Length: 216
Image (cartoon, rainbow, N blue to C red):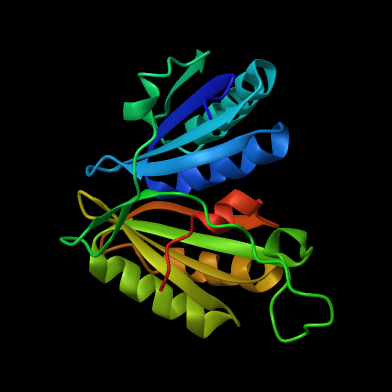
């Protein structure tokens, strides 16, 4: 189905993209169409919704990405053409060279069945839940950072994403206080081993952010 409006936000680095997505989804009633890597540092998020909602979401997301140094490029297309949509919406694609998807549709957030206590609730509905992102240029730096982070606090590694150009992001999850302590300690270990691109904590992340996370 072709949406009323399409919003496109492209950033340098995964961290500003996911933080911007969290902001967009919390600022207006939009739907995330998909995310796509451009193979060299860039991460693009495509959103859909009413003209007003997409305009507001893109403004909010771009502002956050700019503050984080993500060098965002954005555009809102009202009434996207049906023929053009064939090139805008891509099929899910796996890149065997980097062993990860480069076109991703957000996975639906998990909601447990009634009475099922063994499964996790939707993380976006858990007040104390947070995601932590440490993004570096260089493997050595991110390996040292994540090892330090995990030794500092009770956190769990969610996954790792590679954007090309040496950019690697490791994502952790846990209690807000634990994730903050882990990200702080981990990011401080990067100096001298590589370049710290970003370090951020997303408290109570939106559903689409959790649906687009890399997997361990």
